[in-house]
Image 1 (cartoon, rainbow, N blue to C red):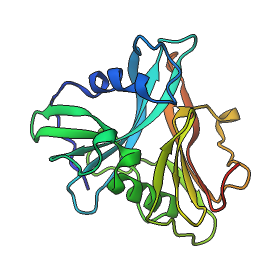
Image 2 (image 1 turned 60 degrees about the vertical axis):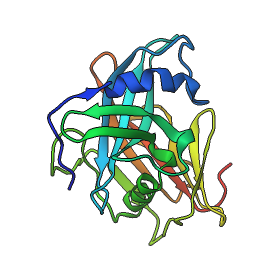
Image 3 (image 1 turned 90 degrees about the vertical axis):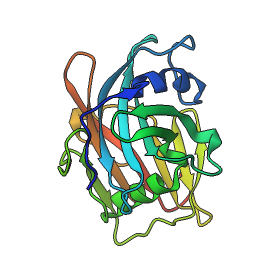
Length: 219
């Protein structure tokens, strides 16, 4: 399991995200720049121990109302070939040195582990504590489905679609919405999902869907 280092990053994660978020089609805040705070998230382990994988949830209060965004990111010790379009930026880690930070939806290691989480082969880990499962992250999958490995990421105004040639689609919800009564309900026709919690600006906690799996093209 990944070790969480108690150290610094320069620039910080939020400082990296601030100029990058407004360039995304799913960003709905003030184009002059977000006002971000951390609201939650979890980690996944890279089986090879080379890539850090974090699913960050951040709140932006720059627009007409606060918005919660899901931002999967990966941390690498060297550039990822062919992923220049997915680079969020670089940062100096106090222990590991320079890290290349990528949009995780465009990093094959993060996508593979997200698929494993949906299938039940991987376990979500606490965002800030080493060797600790995050039991607030739940998942469901109908039957013994296998998510294809050859997923292509396309960003839309509300989510990132990870789709395969056979019609399978893993939809990463970028703009998060609390579930009614705190009980996430799967989308119609969904074959699986991941749900989690995050903190609202008033200090209360919300629960909702983070990712949805369809085995036929979603409408």
